[in-house]
Amino acid sequence: MKGETIDYNFLSEKEDKAREIISIVAAALKEKGYNPVNQIAGYLMSGDPTYITSFNGARKAIRQLERDEIIEELVKNYILAINE
Image (cartoon, rainbow, N blue to C red; front, side):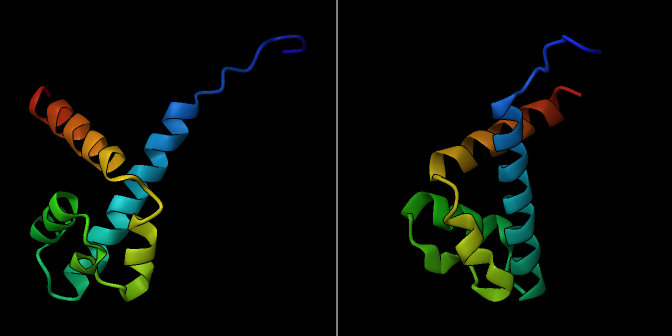
């Protein structure tokens, strides 16, 4: 292995972070009795973070991502799911 180049994929790491944050936020919303789809959609359309509960740090977590990053991750995973 000496001398071999390690392939570092920054995008993969970024995608993993987005996936983890979306999962945390959805779980917190569900636990508090909210519909995660409706709440996340409201946040994405309005930019208003109050659509996301502060329970378990969900609101703080989602603000670590740009809304376009969240949309990209959701669309990518939706397309992958329907093509399987």
